[in-house]
Length: 259
Image (cartoon, rainbow, N blue to C red):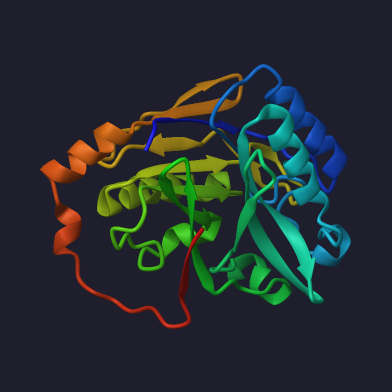
């Protein structure tokens, strides 16, 4: 593995306006270089529970991500509302500069908001291999379910993209740190900012934690950056081989994909 420079955008998502959000992102990253850009959950529309109005039917968000990744020569990831086979999914895309892409459909749907009534849950735990790093993709509410994100010594980092509101922000920060410590992995949690169309407030609250729980991210002009250091992680895991003492669990309806 080589070290990875990661940059996420604290995006004030324009409600239900894909073109406006695409333009915001392009302008924000115009002078930024990184190995990977991260965007929030449903970054092209906002977390909207009427998917029939906003869901991609012709891969609009994916096609924009492909163009953006190619132009910047950088991988980009984030989730979008997608209609597939007459069902809606909250799909986390990971797109490489070559146009190759992977995706994870959100497993744990936020029933409190009615997401489970509008969207279909994913069944696969997805780990992407990018530049030698094994990266687990997760979306927002997944953060509350540690068994699904459990490290079976098969990943090095977790990416969480979210629309996690101010009223529960302490849980967001606490659980991100916990996932890093218990899984001995880098954890980057990217949240949106601003006020959405439901009048929910989202404070600046994106963080990256090292495997020991240390916050390593810095923020400048809404760009949250962190460095994933391969040697540092390997040395830490070698010195503290906690993963080897883990219990064994088998999850039902789980397929692990290594791409």
